[in-house]
Image 1: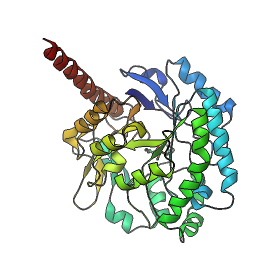
Image 2: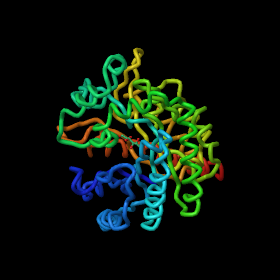
Image 3: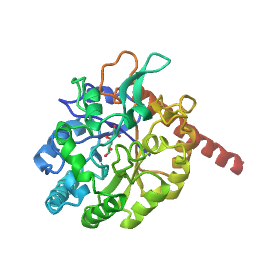
Image 4: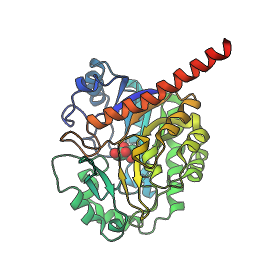
Length: 362
Ligand code: DNO
């Protein structure tokens, strides 16, 4: 596995690359041109600017998260071909700059959803929280207002241009069923995967977060069966996954280690994080440690090790600790702790394998 760290750019992140450099084991920066609205091309010139600053700090730019898909593509509108052409041009430019993996998602309207960004935990830290009853009893624009009342940060997936069109988008999705989303996704994949093969780019869809329908919007990348269906829509190694343990793990029926074994070589990018599920359907994000949440992070890392996983991995959201002022989920400290926990498990597994081989020889 190759450890990478998400970073929002020089003008957009409070964490300098020099601090990321001090986290042991991090090889690459997961980046994006966050200022470019979904649907517009990423020019080589803009890409090269990030490449220069990231590479001069000693990191690779192999993984992009995300090149967002324009809503017209998800809605299957007649204008989708225009946006797909732009997407392809972005893929070509990214390949030219040396990018290997593109993470994206196919969630209608919203990317991830939470009801509180700084929910206090028992230890005094704060973390992202999802309250089921609240989502069921609130209008989406009201939730967006509440979530964004702190203007000191921008949130990936909650970009202003997306939120400005909220009611128009909800109207547009009224008639869109899950099966229609499947067919729009297939149309998109039929266009981009052959190009990804030519460019040697691995496309990695991110699961829906949380993995169920919210506000009546159809969501499909939610469980093992649907992920198998997704991979068969275009059966190519370049049509792969970002396997996000925390997104899928919000549903207790999703068995993450079993998915890792099942989808093995089609997982190009691993997001590892923990969360604590409550019986009433709420969940809160926790430290990465197995004991702190509902997911068995040890078993997850072990499954990757057993698969011989050589892809990219990043710690996912962390808590906000030690009074750090940061974008929700993306502080330095707890993600760095998460990295050390993941690497601690991985390194122990490697050592145990070596020791048992050695014992067998003796
Ligand atoms: C939130 C992230 C998501 C993710 C996208 C991938 O913190 O996990 O915004 O980047 O869904 O396309």
